[in-house]
Length: 164
Image 1 (cartoon, rainbow, N blue to C red):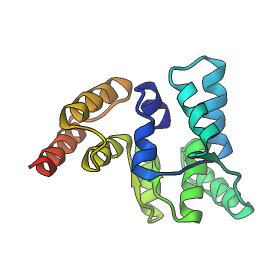
Image 2: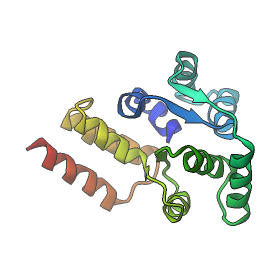
Image 3: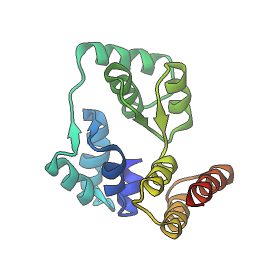
Image 4: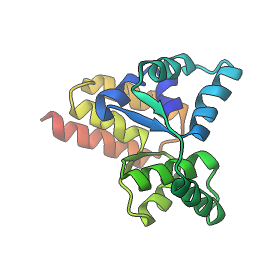
């Protein structure tokens, strides 16, 4: 999700919509360290956000590490997703995730979550994107990651309703 927004040069929307963002060390390694190693598009935006402090890398507590281990043992999620779910659950935070299985796991745990497309819709609702920009950004997102046509339709339908 962070990677997709950064590739599209829209990472700042995350700050505008949600303020401060927490990353665990695994997600930081996946996004920043591995991104830098391959000179990934958008990695500089993420690094700047970390330097400015609105994306913060945080260590997991012992309890959060234990929950992460249980999630890993009982799912096919990767470490970054399990870590993010553990952090969100423990700290009662909104989870921003696009992976279908991670969303299902979050739902079972009673977590609030949203995906990248919903972040874009929220940015539109809060006035950070105009309708045409939302359409263009959702189209660009669908080229960066798979979005079902139903999701695209729903995002644009909701935006049209808010536009009236």
